[in-house]
Every structure is written in C-alpha cells, then in structure tokens.
Image (cartoon, rainbow, N blue to C red; front, side, top):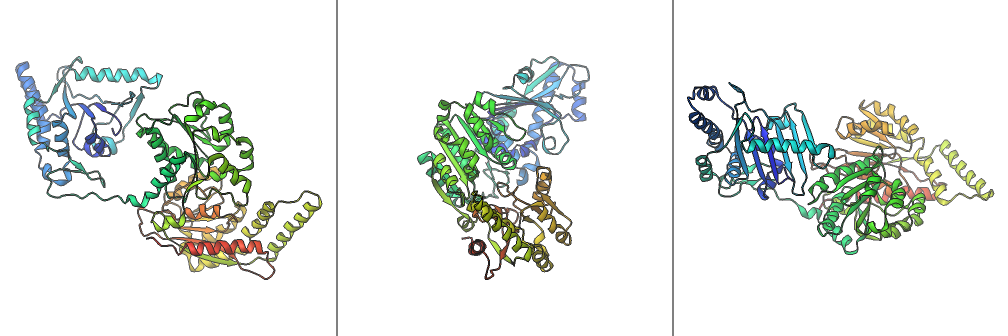
Length: 632
C-alpha cells in the first residue's frame, strides 16, 4: 500500500482495526493521491436479518439495506472509543471517507433465498508504473486477519505471462461487483446523507501520524504528541561521502563497518537514478552471507524507486547472469566476484556507460587471480564504486595499486575512531592476555627458517609474505594460549556469553571446547556452510558462544554481540578491524552497551624474532589507544 496508487478489495469483513495494520503505509496514503475501494459485507445482527426478511416489498428492503450499510460507519464514528486517544484511528477513517480517498460499498447476496453473507476475498494493487498485483485468500481486512490468524494467500503478478490472465480475472470480478452488475449480488454505496454527515464531523485537516509508533494523532487532540527528533547529524558523514563520490563518479569509500556503507551506496544509486544517469547496477563481493545481505538491502530500495529495478542474483544456487546480460536495463545484478570475468566477457562495452559497478569489501578485488582476469575492465563503466573499512592490501602493494587503478582513489574516509566518537559504534574495553612460546612452538619456528634456507639453496626463494604467513601461524596456534584462556575464565566466566572466538583452524578451536563447556553448554562452531544455522541461532541470542575461523570476519551485523576474543589475529590490520567491528555494533535495545575485545599478546623475550613481536606490540598499542576513544 506504500507504493500503489489504488487498492481494490472485496472482502467479507472490514474493521477500523485494519487501519492499525495499514499503519506502515498511512503516511503515504495521506500524502499521495492513493484511492482505496472496499466492497464489504455488513455484519448483520439478528434484528437486521429479521427486519430484512419481514420487508414486504423491494423498496422497503432497499431502505433497510441502506440503513444497515450507513449504520456500520456512523456507529463506528459515534463510538465512545472515538474519545479515547488510543483509538483515534477513527478520525482517520472519517477523514479518508470524507475526502473520497476511501470509498466503501456494501454487498448483499441475493443469489438464493435466505442468502448468507458476501464472503468474497480478493484484492488488487495497482502501481503507478503500470504493474498490477492481485491476490485471493482466506484473510479478512482486519488486524486479526493480517497479523494473528492462520491464513492462506495466493498472489498473481501482471508482469508474469503465466499470471496475467489470473490478474485480469480478479480485476473483472471486482469491477463487475463494484458496478453492481454481478449476478445475484446487490452492491450499494453510502447514502448521500451519511456522506454529508461524515464530512461535517470529519477533521478538516489531515490527521498527523507519530513516526515513533505509527499512531494517528487527531489535529484537534488536546493531548499533543511530539514526534521524536531524528538525530540525522550522526549520519551526516554519509551525505558527505555521497557528494565526494558524485563529484568524480569513481573511487573508494573507506568507511568503518557499521557506519552505513550500504545506506550510502543506495543514496548514490538514488541520486544517479533520479538524474536519469543509470540503466543498470552491478554489486559484487565475496561470500554467500554478504551477498545475501546485499540482496536483502537492495530489494526494498528497488521497490521504492519510481520505476523499480529487477533484482537478479548470480551466486551460490542462483544463476541469473545470462538474464542480466540479455536485458540489463532496469536491472540490478548481485554477483560473486569470482564470476565477474565471465560477466565482463558477455556484457557489451556500449551498455557499460550507464552502469555502476559496486565492489563491497573491495580489498578482495586485488587478489592475483582477479588482477589477471579483470585488468583494465572497470574503466569501461560509467561509474565505479569501492567500499571497505580498509581498502589497502597490507604487504601487497601490487594488489592495492590494482584496486585504485581500476576504481579510483579513496574519495572519503570515516574510520573506527570517528564512528565511536559519533556514537555510531560503541565504546569498548581492551584486555590483553600475555603468553609465551613453548619449546614445541620454537621448534616450529626453526622449521620455517630451515625451509626458507632450503628454498633459497634450491633457487626457489620464499617471498617475505610467505615467510610472514608461516611464522604467524606458529604464533596464532601457540600451545600456551588455551591454558592462559582457561585461567582467565576461572575469574571472568562472563566472557563466554555473547561472545565470538576467532581461531586459526578447526583443530585448534577443538582444544578450547572443554574449557568453554565448564561455563556454558550453549556453544557452537561456525566453520562451514553446514554450520550456518548456528550463526542464526547465535544472532537470535539462543547460543552463548560461537567459535569460528574467518567466515564472519566481514559483512554480518549481530547487534547483541558483546565480546570478541582473538586467539588468531593477522599481521594485517584489516582482519583485526573486521573482527572487532562485529562487537562494536550499537544495540538499540541496550543503548549503554560497551563491548570487550580480548587479545593474545606475545611477551617479549631477548632472542625472539623482532618483526613478529613488533606486530603484536603494534596491535596492542593501536587497540589500547582506540579503546580510550569516547562518544562525544
């Protein structure tokens, strides 16, 4: 109802309580030229039925029917509930009827002797861009029918060839009844006298709506309701990011997770679409979780557009890339990054000028495989947008340069410190747990250096990145960490609740389960797609503790997450940012939320590798300083 310009409904029962469940659309109904046509069955009392049966001629019968029909509306508007501010929806009902925004007609079946009620239940939404949706089912037009009863609805869409005839059939059925031409059915409007009475008693101005709870506020109400002010200034950075991007049409937005990268993107899309500069949209990233999240965000945005975009998907079990290539105009394609090379091969160059390509978690674009398959392709698109909390690929200069060459430089920055100060992310405490390497760990380090030496002698030297990765794995899986953790929990067992623990691999995570089990049985792992239900249960608060590797490092919003424990933390700052971001999300149900980040930090020893120690110390100094940031 928020998006249609006409709603036609033939239904057995309508109550003013339906206005409650219409509340999400009431502002649009009041603001725009939306017409609602209702054919309803009067709820006949025993006295009404007996009076109709006793009617001696058709004229008397018609007079009684008109009285019964009018009485439904006049009784509602004269109800004592009208004086109750909790039921001021009746003011809206009167205003809609008086201003011919809601036109009600009443159906009296006459197809058999001693006929029952009009029990038809069909509905039709007409949209300003020409599409129509028709439905039929068991629900009445009431708050119970919409939100509490067990109902069944069949839906037909005019843009599908298989549905088109069904849509037309429902339209014909409604219009025939509306015009009073349906055989065996008498349909009458409100009398002119009743309409004039309603106009006299209806509010002269449109009732206002409280945005907080969608309750309707009569203009003459003595109990004035002040609408809550929306603190838009907190999100002003999004508008600045939009303007910076649109000035050049390409570039990267470096924004901390949770600060509205998706919302900023849809603002950019809306501006380009409103200015008539956009034919199609490509949104690309990695991982089913993140792709699904984009789908959930883009579909409602698309519906709100003056002419909605078709939303196509090409990832996991979805295969709609060819549909996009064959007819990309007016379409959004949400596609996994690994499929971009295939898309680019099929997508004509001339079509790309009016397409925007959006890369979320854009640091992933700089991988060696993608550099080889996508080099030089992005410049052919009219608009190119990258999104990331940290777009640079640490220790991969070539990958970082590739990102900026393909999409453009960083045009806007808004980091963790900015987000905490503005109250977009919450404050946090930082707890370092110090550990040392045991003899087995040191032996594993020596094996890495031996491998380095052997590779060098074989004229196949290890790169510095390879060395860092293998050395870091020793520190990430240090033998002492589980014992340090167990000792910590003996005094602070609260940190296994509302907690995600990041480990390097499943085998290492298994070592922690016995310790966690001492304090809660509600713990699960999330290592593979099969464990996805565990993530959902955790997000819903049914699981205390989740142990994982990399799967939820990015893109998942779990507002009730309180603590993050870093057994494994990459040398690159990117991964740490993505992981602690998970618990820094503000929780509307707990405005004073303060998160906790627990980190394992190597204690310095005289002969330790200074590069690795400095990486731990650098992270310690950075997180310690960041944890002192306070909301303004």
